[in-house]
Image 1 (tube, one colour):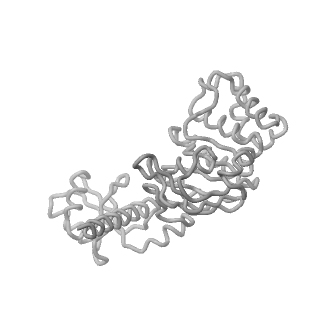
Image 2 (tube, helix red, strand yellow):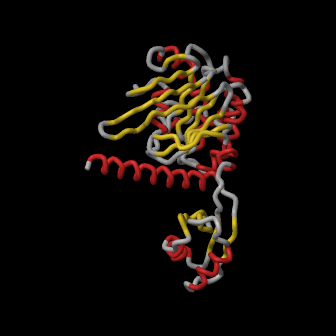
Image 3 (cartoon, one colour):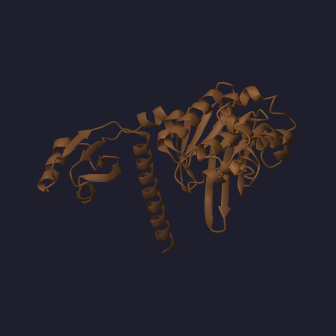
Length: 317
């Protein structure tokens, strides 16, 4: 349903997308995962025919995003990252307006949005601008679905909403997927990656990895340890200064450690930290999560970029 081939996009001297390629199958829930500045929004705006690429080509439902943009806009539902509905219209008026734009009615496609809309229907006379973050989210999704699109594109839909609303929103996406709607969603939250069928990990306009969340984690073949003590700030500094450690990142109550060699044992980490007067030290092997994989890929990409830059400097000399 979605096909992207070598899409590139630049803003002045900033390259937002660097020859991006991927595809999304019909009925799939595909996630673009990465921090702010990764290029997710630029990519989605190109797919939604709101932005022209500098290179490459893309298709939505077999239609070219540049040449057949008018047809695409009738087949796709879009929920941008920023709430973009009319805040001086009521919930009901916003939904009616978008239904009219697409030549349909609320009643005609009510079954599609019922599970979502019933949660905000008691507030249908309230101005959209007066809704909570979670309610705005549900209204925006209802408006994106009211014309029964084949593809649903959601740009960071859970940013800025509470944990309960985030959970409810993903439950709604899973139900929509059962209705054979293809869903492309972007998010900066790594924990949401596991809710997708496949994900693309993005950083600085590039794809670092594309696969199922489980396969991405399974492909991680390095030892990983978790450590903690009574002084977590000093713990991170001491670990990063140790030549046996490649990386050390804070993950909640622990620091995740990747050793510079495969032989480092938890007891050695504990002994090293206790010599530096850390108290109540804990250290053990753990299984990597998708955020660990992302950090490793980022570090690898950074070293590759640095190496290429140094190579170019040598060539210039």
